[in-house]
Length: 146
Image (cartoon, rainbow, N blue to C red; front, side, top):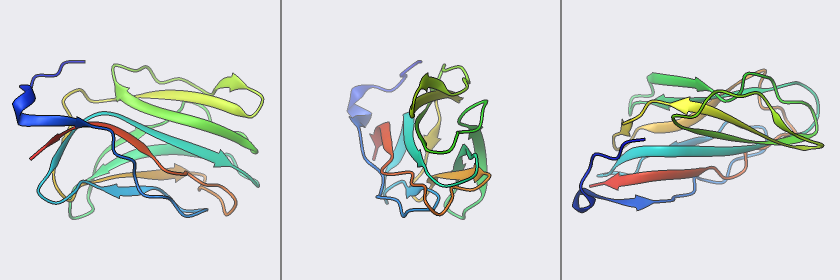
């Protein structure tokens, strides 16, 4: 991963997203007057009930138009498991890696991705999140500009 910016233009931040509602998709917005050079995104999905979700990370502009999608795993998540999904430049797409009820999956993001103020990092889950499942609080690793 390249980091082409001089340190005087931005600062490394590790903001947490908003606490997510049970059964809802995650959706966080880049703060006003800021831009994010995205280094990594991490979501944890605790899956209860029925169904086998497959989370997709979406980047949307300030008008809500989806400009990028990256599937979080090459395999759907099993019922009654928790999976940590990590997206970052240079990562390979994997299936569910782990055992028991704790799994991990990685997926790629474009290198040099910059999100402007008002842009969104959100999920869109194939198969749905489910009424008894929760994304929890996402974690972002960004260089914040502005």
